[in-house]
Image (cartoon, rainbow, N blue to C red; front, side, top):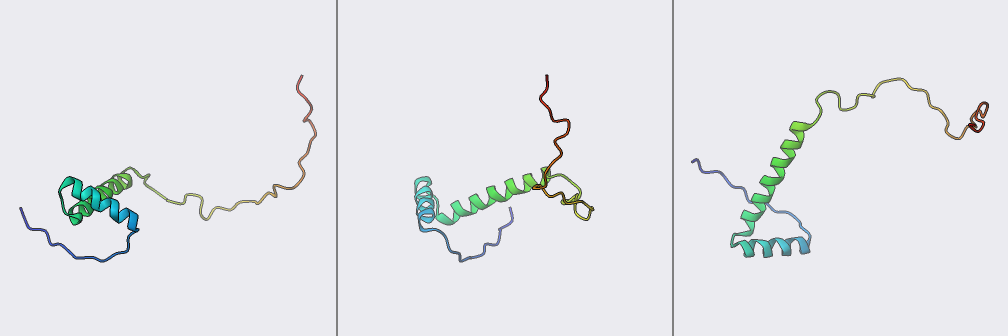
Length: 85
């Protein structure tokens, strides 16, 4: 198996979230970096699966179509709106 290159990163994380992550890593007996890496892998895998199930084609199918704006505050005709018998 080939050795994977690792990269040191710096980021800002909510203190409570970091505390909970440290507790989870300690409970599992793994380094925090391993827990974060595993979590990122799971997230990226689920994002890739969502992308695979996304509809193919135009993301904005109505873009560029002409439309007529109808003012929703205009009074509507009430002719023929009598109570049904």
